Image (cartoon, one colour):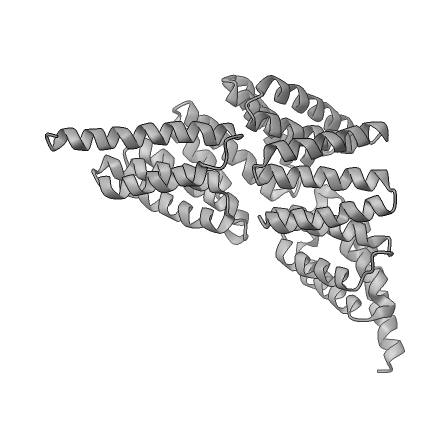
Length: 399
């Protein structure tokens, strides 16, 4: 086949998939799952040839919502990296490619790479004097630093982004940023401020009729209410989030709500309800995915419930699996949480030496996170538990 004829076929194929992707909304992303390999191949082939590269870059950006919702992060990271390798700073798409790549790095828990990539996006936005793009880069940096638990830095970027979006009349971006700032305030222990920001975010997403974003804000509001001890209100907010998500194809968000409900029921001492929620979270989607962070949360949830039920051998197995997954996910605070729970499990069967070693590792994980209320609470709990088992051990030996 002559090369021009081949390139015409590639261009036609890209145009076809752009048309398909343009007709599929948030609630219908699941329809594209069976076409995933065709979409991936269309982008890859298009990127290989200069004449079709612009259309392939456009398709890559167009499919981001589908990729983010359905969890095809690994393959699209590779595709975006290829796009950027063939895109100069002068091309308009460069900023958007960097922003999207940074988001996928963040979703994949590659937080250092996410920060570097969004910093590069901010530099391009500044060079173009593009205030909206700069605010978007700052929003993403706020999210990056939040997940890295650098909360002061996260809030600084978030407030700068919020100021920009308000001045530009960007209602949806304002709602997104208030959601992030609300979570930051919650993690800092500023619960009244967190609730204020999150209620405003919820109102913004209701008005925008964006179900997945609304559910995320409702879930974060529920977490804040739970932290404030308002358990019934928190439960209602989680259940509303689940209802909003039910008709969507946002499977990971459904998992996250069930994990949160499991945690709420655990706090209430309702072990059967907690276990049922964790079972719903442990869906075929999650099991088949590469989302080790949420797999770790589910394994921890199962282990913690079984510990409270006195099923210590089962608890130990789940908690050890969770520790292994947290090491891959690279979240030191959540790793410490599971290490301390595993230490409690081993202490219950009088394995004092390993329990003490696990408490020591958990405390070492927490030492650099003094801004984070969860980290501070875990530090206090685990320090006291470690001392208590050592005191009991000394007493039993007659010291």
